[in-house]
Amino acid sequence: MSAFDVDLFVIGGGSGGVRAARIAAGYGARVMLAEEYRVGGTCVIRGCVPKKLMVYAGRFADEFEDAAGFGWTVERPRFDWGTLKKRRDAEVTRLEGIYDANLIRAGVEILPERAVIEDPHTVRLVASGRTIRAERILVAVGAHPVKEPAVPGIDLAITSNEVFELESLPERILVIGGGYIAVEFAGVFAALGSRTTLLHRGDKLLRGFDDEIRDALAEAYGQRMDLRLGRTLRRIERREDGLCAQLDDGSDILVDQVLVATGRRPNVAGLGLDRVGIATDGAGAIPVDAYSQTRVPSIYAVGDVTNRANLTPVAIREGHAFADTVYGGKPACVDHRLIPTAVFSTPEIGVVGHNEAAAREIYGKIDVYKARFRPMKATLSGREERILMKVLVDCASDRVVGVHIFGHDAGEVIQAVGIAVTMGATKADFDRTIAVHPTAAEELVTMRVPEVTKHPVGVG
Image 1 (cartoon, rainbow, N blue to C red):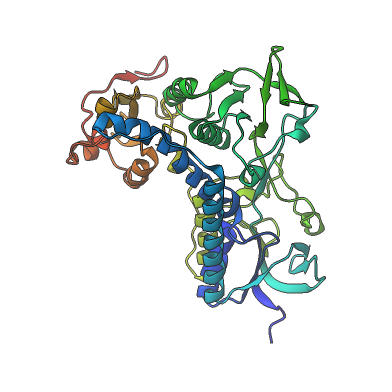
Image 2: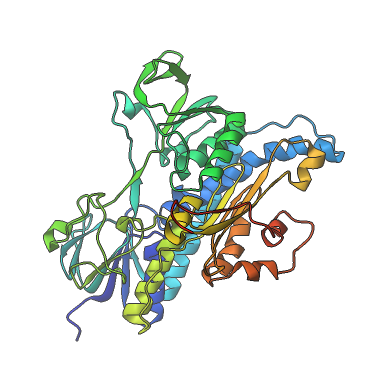
């Protein structure tokens, strides 16, 4: 008889934990999974999925407006927040049920309570007090939003968790931050009709993205909302007519809600890592090796709690690779160097590979192919918008090392482009691909002349 109750105990029912549990069970492992909130994690319950539904809702405003240019007469549309919230929440509940059903079908036992680590092979269920012995433990507890900077009155603000609980659309909202979450929610609220202010301490949004993409986003957002760059929050005060946010330049912004989206931290508090000698790093994340194993051989970790690349598809891939390695006899590790990603701003952003500055630093001499144009749809709608596409090529190998798209459906396009770039496609491969016409994406395979060959000083 085994000395363990289960082969694998997974702490956390988000994307990474669920995938690891299902695949491990498929290999024949006895698996338990504990989740104290709702199965599905941040992405399904209060992240990517419900947020994307809100993005869709906001984009209808542009569609109604554009329709007139194509001959449609549309009565003045009205938006109802309550309807969106009800239908969005119902879809989240439906998806949660699918996650539960898939786990049960795979043979995974779901425990709806918090679990903490007692020793390298033991977990304790907090509510019931039950202890379970496991040959291996996988930590997949994700991360949580933080309210920073910790200025007076910051408790009056909400985070990306509470935003889904709002019972009405705020007439005025201040969004603080410059990353994915802040940019996306600012775009959503502006599109749905809120008077939106986006406040960021830096001089550009989306740190780490290509500078031209960042500039294009700032230009577009400056037309859609009150964009305040290079400014910081000093304090928040409640007044009779709303919340007053005081900035470092002495100005005040009066709003109904303040959404703080300045960062997330791994959910390691009270997890029991100290009991087994696992020290977190400076960001509070669990250090792991290429196979997601911690310094304790029986304990692994995947997803945002490791702070490697905090994206849902990455957590899923890490969870799958863990199960393949440990239970499938197929050692696999995730390459975090090349990750296609999208920002669901409006306009949208899709990226794979290096930005121009990084490519220049890594490869020296690069060719930059660029297209900036008005989309075909805008010629009749009259909308003043531009699509920007950049393809970065390493001159020595002709390999495409970065693709950046700013414009409609950029996320959909970059997924397909990501396959080619991941396979090591060259510019010649792009050139010999027949274009699909008329599309915006055809520009990616019809750019023939580089805008300029850029390289650092001293590189020939």
